[in-house]
Amino acid sequence: MKNLYIVTGAAGHLGSTIIRMLTDDNCVIRGLILPSEKAEFPQKAEYYRGDVTKAETLEEIFANTEGYNVYVIHTAGLVSIAENDYERLYDVNVRGTENIIEKCIEHNVTRLLYVSSVHAIPELQNRVISEVSSFDSEEVNGLYAKTKAEATEAVIETCRLGYLDAVIVHPSGIIGPYDNGHNHMVQLMKMYISGKLPAAVEGGYDFVDVRDVAAGCLEALEKGRSGECYILSNKYVAIKDLIENVRKATGGKKKICVPIWLAKCFVPIFSLIARITHTRPLYTSYALSTIKGNGHFSHMKATMELGYRPRAMDLTIADTIAWLRSEA
Image (cartoon, rainbow, N blue to C red; front, side, top):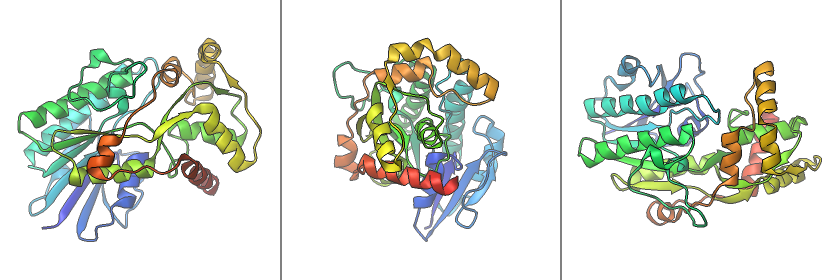
């Protein structure tokens, strides 16, 4: 029996990379994109226009699946570091995921792979963060984290009740090629290359190559235990080191790294400039709190059970720069 893969968020950084990596010739790929988005690989996948927040628009992509092993890879989600985005975040991340769960049950899918986030896991001070088995929006900070925690718990609970075979992955901070600046850290790298980055900030986080996350998703779909969660991380990287690696790769100028407390003073100015220029602010209070907090995560479980092994960060940076330059 052929495999049918339904990939939501198929025009996004991770979703499109997963489609790039689906190399099984004996399969059918369906990608869900918003009406305004472009079909990235029309020669490889069938694209359906819909919106996870509107259940009626999902019927077509789930139709005519008889005779297939149906695997749903739910990458669609709203990533936001803004301070006032709760309604949109809840609508996409929670209600959208609930709609996908309902469609999976209704159409008897073989397995759901849900892409959560490490932000859904409660932060621990002075400890490396590992997987947890339950999620509570009250235990995490930030609007994005709260909606991802609630959506993750919905998937876990549905699986516990036996309605669905599902596996959850928690990527850390995704960077890498195939994105032209929509990703926040790729945006930072793009601004540096173009000379528009005034300064970097102190702090850091765990950053991971999008290609490694995509491979980890497919490994989890195949080998992951039902109802289990897997962190797909790499290692902690200081922002100043990331920028320095970009500088060495491009021959650019050194950038000062300002303390986070000082950067927070300028958050209102960053927001004002973003509104005037109709762009997205690179630094917000939530973003600065994130890179100041505990950004150390363990991917040991994914390595042991799935064979997950992320690449070196200097390779990711080099490939990202090459991609950005090729798209300029």
